[in-house]
Length: 270
Image (cartoon, rainbow, N blue to C red; front, top):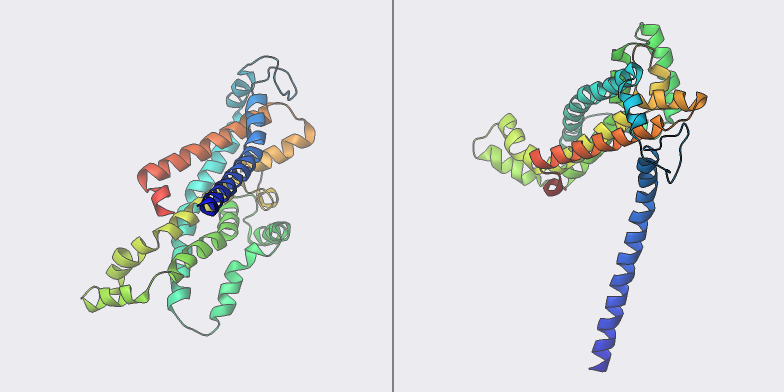
């Protein structure tokens, strides 16, 4: 009896330590975000934490700046264009890789996943030369293509994991009951790989919205993303407007996750 109580006590201590360690990790990740949020309300011309007083001056400065608003719109527009295109292409590629056998399959898969292994600075220089040669340098098209190539592997990998867990018998059973390949794909395959598609969508949107290493080589004065503007801005000055921009980034990410959860069920998908 005493030994049983000792084991139960030992298990409870272990559980407590796991929860404590997890809480410390979350706290470590949350504190910098809280510092940025609080410092964004500083009325002074330099970041201050904790702020001696609270002011919305830098948020007013941000939303009154046409340059910041244009870059924010450019980043949002890129996400709205890049994410659906990449999810459609990445899902089709992942399904084809898992279901089809053809010569050069491994080489093609390695090529599509290569942006994960090649340094983004090298990719940025390559896009710069290629875009200039094709006359696309400084255009929105160049930014879209560059972002699609960068986020493409995330979608393939996420959907590929779901495809590996999908039993091919389900698809064969659907077609044996009279459903064609297209109907089977939309009514059997897609619902079963929904977690991978959802994960790919989130990764594609977040990666595209925050991408800077490649964008800094492809962007032009007409098409500047928020991360590129932040990168250029901090080289010249550093006032709390950067913190205000970061808070807007956080709000957009939270709102996007809430919308996905309410419409598609992010929690259930994962």
